[in-house]
Length: 241
Image (cartoon, rainbow, N blue to C red; front, side, top):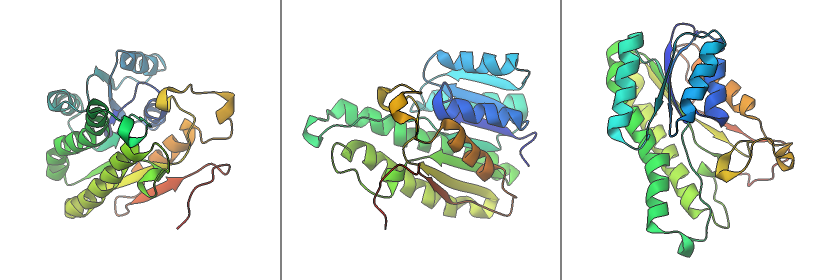
């Protein structure tokens, strides 16, 4: 189902986005990777060295409309279409509300929310024209409950993303476009300036787990949409409905 499709992946320099790129490449997906640092080119070059020739990499800001539009246009020019968008770029800042600066609030919302809006907005004309597309956003399990201490900033962005994607899914379904979210709990990544592979996170979800879920959602039959997947490690305690 995925072979030959073209995908844009944001936040692909490392962690979940990098692993999604690797698994998509294995499935024969043509890639356009966007990252906020020059490390994104190392991700792209590694895939090319592994034998995957259809890989473009771009260093840019997902909250910058011009950067986003350049990636979308480049993918269209190179591959003729944009069939899949994976909104993975995100940042986390955890502080008591009175300690959050206006700059931190804006930056976190710019990346986590505005970035999703801009990339989605940019690909929709192409997907509507071709009457097909899949838009998947990596949100968080805290889009379904709240963190008691220090989580107001981050949680607010994920609630916003969940609401945005839910409305988008209804808006675009008549065009054959599917939209959904992946809501992971604790994942062993570089999130929050931590180190991937830290022994303290040994029993957390792995980036491979999240990437496999995304591949499953993107590869579902065209008549089927997986609206949402929520994933947790067995070791994580979290509020239940």
